[in-house]
Amino acid sequence: MAVASTESPALEPVAARARRRIMRRILPYIFFLYIIAFLDRVNVGYAALEMTRDLGFSSAVYGFGAGIFFFGYFLLEIPGCLIVEHWSARKWIARIMISWGVLAVIMGFIHTPTQFYVVRFLLGAAEAGFFPGIVVYLSHWFTPSDRAKTIALFMAAIPISSIIGAPVSGLLLDVHWLGINGWRWLFILEGAPAIVFGVVTILYLTDRPQKASWLSEDEKDWIVNELENEKQLKLARHSLSIFEAFRHREVLLLTAAYFLAVTGGYGFIFWLPTLVKNISGSSNLKVSLLSAVPYCFALAGMLFFGWSSDQTGERRWHTSVPLFLTAIGLILSVTVTNPMLTISMLCLAGIGVHSYLPSFWSLPTKFLTGSAAAACIGLINSVGNLGGFVGPYAVGYINTATSSFFGGICYLAFSSLAGGLLILTLREARGRAVVAPTAHFGVKTN
Image (cartoon, rainbow, N blue to C red; front, top):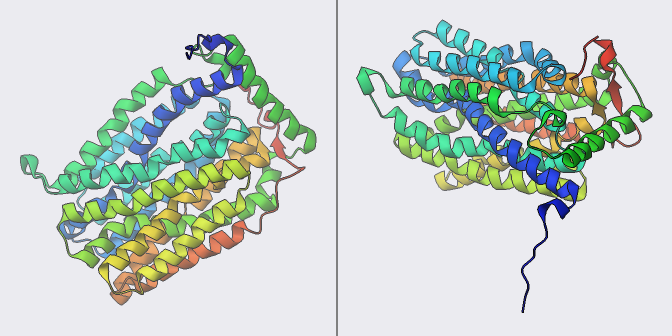
């Protein structure tokens, strides 16, 4: 007869206990915050189904306004990452959420192109530092062997935000409460949660393992020692200042590759509902539901590539192959004529648009640590995300000039292809690390 196990949790290996508790405590909450963040960033794509007609915006006006978000994002990205590294992640993340929530609500009250541009720019400035700050924050809690998988689970919030947000946005577009158009309610109601959970974040998150009252002493000691050993190993190999790290070959290549990947990715994300509307001619609700389908495939692809990357320890091909899938899917989507085939090719593109991210964001931490990691992750993300302006604006501009999406979609495909090829030029990060001592900034680390 089988005997039930009576083994005490205290007898479980400390590494397994610490990993499980950290995962359960931090990841679900960070995951939820990123759903809110990404939805507020891209819901303009669904609002555009009614907003552009209601306000008389051309494709070029919409593309410029959707993309100008990333100029504001660019300005505060690197300072935000350093604040997370040296001050308080939870306080900074809370500040970001409250300010972007307020601005997301204000989006519901715009009337002119200038107001559209200004609020989108400020929204980007308010959100700056959130994603790379979270990447830096996760590096304070998870060991290198767990990071791609952890980032994959965290970034699964991107497709899930679209899977959830698409039908919700489609429903909101059709309401007219208090005489206010549905696209305005979309911004107001989807912006409010960021304000609420910004306050909750201050109370819930913990900045560092040393301060985690929810970990036992041996669990704290294990994770602190693991992360310190990683840091010392990198320090023993090589040391550069932050400004030297900015000129490092791999950092520059990652920045350029991310710019190209983001150009293709956000061009796809912001224009997908409009493309589906043109293909199907369906109602707003049906368009939003169809637009959610590529993100279902994206979610599966992201989890698979993140898991596979951690299992094999390989990062470059796990980053470049999804970008090649994006290029193939986009090109085929504008060359096939059958609507169902077109949607299928958009699903293929959707897989690639998101699946490169977990392994990509594991690449910088293979050779960066400390202030250099925080600053260079901020550099890569801020400069790279300028592609979030280029992609949507290029599609809108080319569509206005040619009355066709063909040229714009081909441009997005080329950007994704070029980004994938650049990733393959990276050297394997073995035997060398890039580190910046905190003393270069005269800032005391918590």
